[in-house]
Amino acid sequence: MTTTISTIVKLLPTKALPPRERLQELAKTSARIFSTTYNPHNARTGNRILRERLRGPTLLDYYFPGRRFGVVDLRRHFPMMSFVDEDERQRLLDVQSKKARGKGAPKKKKVGNDKKKKAKIVRGGGGGEGYVRAKL
Amino acid sequence: MFPTISLSKALTLGGYVNVRVLRDHAKREAFAAAEQTRQALRYIAQNTQLPLLQRTKAQVELALMNPNTRRLKIKNRCITTGRGRGVLRNFRICRYQFRLLGKAGDLPGVRKANW
Image (cartoon, rainbow over all chains, first blue to last red; front, top):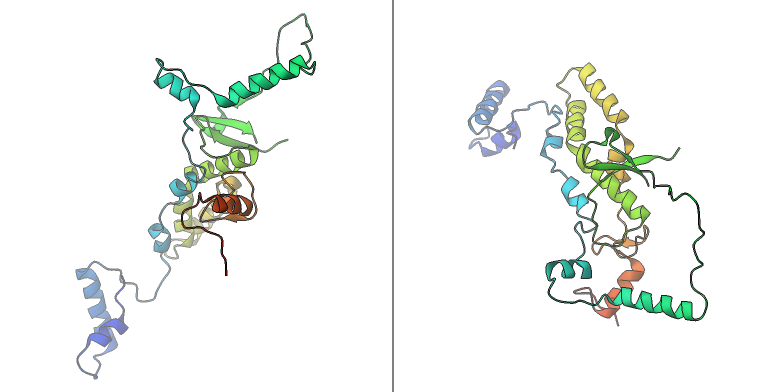
């Protein structure tokens, strides 16, 4: 909060005003006592920016960070029980029916060397720890 | 060649994920990481009581920062489809998903207008 001369003037009981210097002094003293800002010329101090809250955490929350709980998690947490993955079961059924109709995936080509190309992910760099530089 | 962008290694998102959503999320991470630096530089640049050279230097440094650390690069996308346009801010979903979910009664307080 800032203490300006006009606010002090409003609080005065009489209409006869003390000299301007006196009022400024009063504003300064009151600012010192109540530890408010004394800025008579309204200079831009940039305090507005310091007062802003950080928006990063809110913006990071937008896409629901955190893993979705699925059948895999259920199986891991309750190994004594059996769970049916409905999507996976349906997929396997579809593959089976396609194969039966002769419309399955073609057989893999036999290649001499088994060296497979790995997807290029450049790790590290300037991103700091825990970050991957990926082409997006 | 392609612009690269840093993405958290332990990335887990609960909503619909496609490359555009990932890209946007990477920008969010970049913004969150650089936000304090950015605010400090802004404070120096806008404080008229500091020497002009210091303020100008802060301005230049701000301008040279990675553009992906800017807040305006972040765009709210639909969390169920990843669509970038027609997203209702309060529900975080696009207009068609809003219609579907609203009709199904999945959005609290939303119902079809009738008069």
